[in-house]
Image (tube, rainbow, N blue to C red; front, side):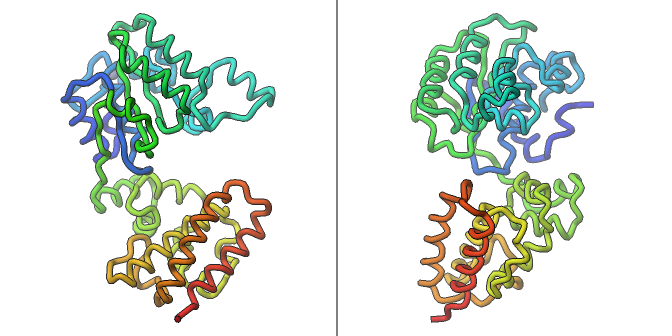
Length: 334
Ligand SMILES: [Zn+2]
């Protein structure tokens, strides 16, 4: 079976388009949930594939197999350890050992050690003779030191190595890194395409629509919502539950999830007030928009709360405060 058959249709189309162009370094950029990682992996797989077709990697040659089982000698994935673990990539021996012994937690940044190994990798000769590839994701998780190390290799690539940097915040990358890459802006799927894909991933038709809305049209984020264990239906009842100050609906959500949901609710009410269509909720599920100044003040507070959401002192108390604040904002009519 072809590896490209597994790709979402909008990713497959972009992969074909990029493979038709030359370039030793691509920067894939766009918001989360559009498939940067999938597209990056499709590109490096096609570059290393022994029988690549126009649409990409064959999915059945020894090279494709080695990527499928995460042991390709000519592919280096450069990711924060937390992301490696999430996506099923093995950590280096030393790193795994340190984490197993609880000497440290998996890193959320791309570590300097990992970058050093990647640079050594870039200097080596290709093991399978089809060149080498480095996949960096999410590229914005490089700190200043790792980014500068990568820059040197991008400036003078040692011949047969190609790069894909995938980023959900490309503006945070060094301008000198951006300028060394060909930029590709991730395409958004059409709504019908995204809904079909969500159903193919096992979501019921009615839920797929709610999930896609909740994720603002980003299909992979929609799947993350489903995987978080929250009921898609709870999304539809959320606006009115917040207006009534009901904690029960979100009692088992994380503070970050509640803040995100309230941000989206606030966004949609501001849109309605400006005469625009809501984006994240169905208009029928929204309460009457409160006064504009109340919404603006609430939005500011949510932005502030988002900064502490990952480390709340007490998440139960934080949820209570968030719901009560939402209730106040949503009932201010003057
Ligand atoms: Zn292949």
